[in-house]
Amino acid sequence: MALNKKKRVVVLKGGTSEERAVSLVSGSECGAALSSAGYEVIELDVNKDVVTDLKELEPDVVFNALHGRWGEDGCIQGILEWLRIPYTHSGVMASAMAMDKERTKSIYRYLGLPCAKSVVISSTQLATEDFMSRPYVIKPINAGSSIGIHFVHNQGDDNIVEYPYDGKVMLEEFIPGRELTVAVFDDNPLTVTEIITDRWYDYDAKYSKNGSNHVVPASVPKEVFAACKKFALAAHKGLGCKGLTRTDFRWDEKKGILGLKLLETNTQPGMTPTSLAPEQARLCGISFIELCRKLIEDSSCNR
Image (cartoon, rainbow, N blue to C red; front, side, top):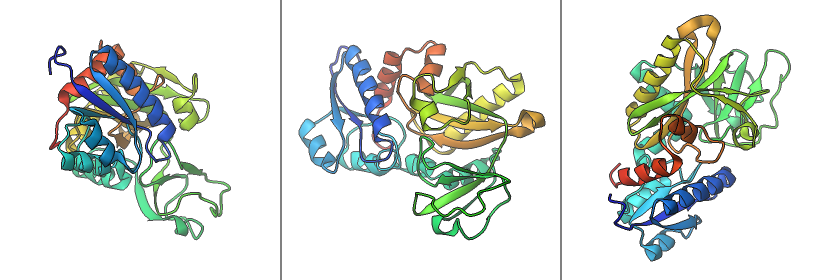
């Protein structure tokens, strides 16, 4: 797509998921970058009228800056396919697969990628018994931004009776050690970041100023660094992802390379000032404006 050919871009942001606030920031940041790159940009706060809105706005391209359910799970991608509007990031199937944490793990396992042990149960079963050995982590099956994460330690938490999310949840073995992540852009793993926090990488640590420290590139052994990039690319391709993704890891350094485990792959990484993927891109010489522009260039239907 030539820059001198002005294109109308609608940036989808906001939405109705619990990650709405983050999406509003991502969308505004991306909208400003695309305007600077010379595109005609319209930022659309998505609601149930999204089909009507898109028909009226008649975009050449949609930049998807939604996070969470409806925007990251294949739903909006299906609408865009139906309307035949080219869009950024991953398509229907890859988005749906990656949003479901346990289905993501099924792909990891099929590919031979190391991942944490897990089991899926109904949230109503949490108070009845332990379904895996402690310590473990409770995660909503289809939420992001660390929403709904609950740690079950070896001591205490004998009865979990007030978990705030209904439906299926995933119990995942707790992997001690260090938090690592790799962004994949245009089928290339960028680099490895280590995330350092006072407690764990929760919502505030992700999005608050100075909520976490990022060591990029991560100071880890070469074989771990290389494995992170290799595994992130394999996950990206194995899930059928497009554009930009980010795959998260835990590494128990006491076990060396065998302590490295994949956790999940995010098909709509945050694009806020504190987000990890844009930071990795900058380190690799890709400015935020260039990152957004390249995602527009890569946009299509049938993703």
